[in-house]
Length: 196
Image 1 (tube, rainbow, N blue to C red):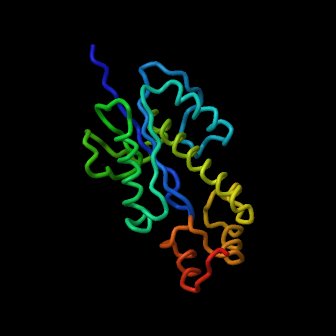
Image 2 (cartoon, rainbow, N blue to C red):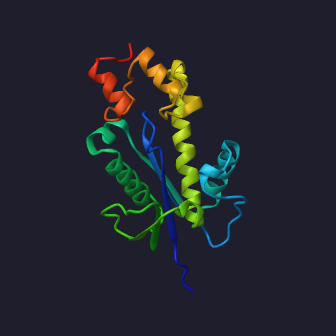
């Protein structure tokens, strides 16, 4: 009996003002033990971290990829997200038969049959697994940035345009890791407000 290998793909970090956008691709075995696995947004951070380790241990194959702020600036956030997804699928050690992608569009040139599923992260378990890996990778980048630049509070708001983040941008200026095309960052760059 041939086993059909399905990969799930999801992204994390399209909305924040800083850092990379991440995508993950995951192929799960027929039998797995991932209790309470669902869309990463519905899980506590502690549970996501636990599940991420379990997914990596049990998956047939998994890959996390990203597109950095420079690539986001060059391509725009949508195309950079598609590129991160393509990198994640192409980085899998095992070629899937089919790829399920969270959302409403499929990246070009995937080289494998693919279908987009709106709200797929709460419908298809492979996409849920990918959402957990993408989110935990994105959070790890934010914790690393928080160590470099403690005054911005990245560990709290994860780079989103919260009042705290916008106030820090006003006070301290734009970092090299900020996304140049996102409106609040663009406005400060126009005033020459760079981090010193």
